Image (cartoon, rainbow, N blue to C red; front, side, top):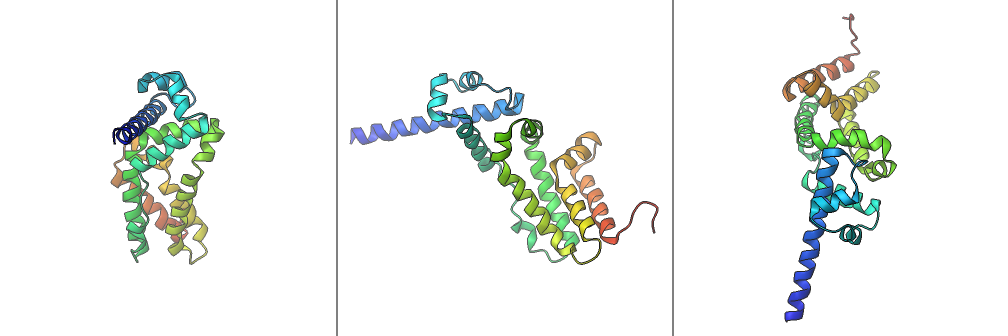
Length: 202
């Protein structure tokens, strides 16, 4: 019995150490970026030795996968089920943007840093590929009800632009809009695309 208890306690301690390393890495990635984050900095922030970091994460891939999995578990992206049952297409997109913009606000620090790191870190881009696929899938699901005319490609592009983190960041941070104002502007763009209306056209 004591031996079983000791094994469980040791396993719990190992898991707690692993979590500290992952959370330290995530914090550093948000503060200084993945490129500048070193194993020494991670060890210091987590309160462990460098060797301990390598014991849990022997290479960069295992560390990035561990951090990505932990972050997404704590910050899961919006579930399309929340809006895909809505029949009216404008209301469907409006509801989706409300959830998506709330998610962008929640994950802003990490996403802003990822936009800088991904082009310079091919491994990170590879690990985040499922997220890129997710956003493309969301775009296509939302665009499907609008895919019934000659302006379908315009609608798809407008919706893809509207759901992008960079769009939300530009409108809210650079232009000073609220999430609601940004959503209304994007809905106007999408509806204009559906009607094939350009500036100066009736």
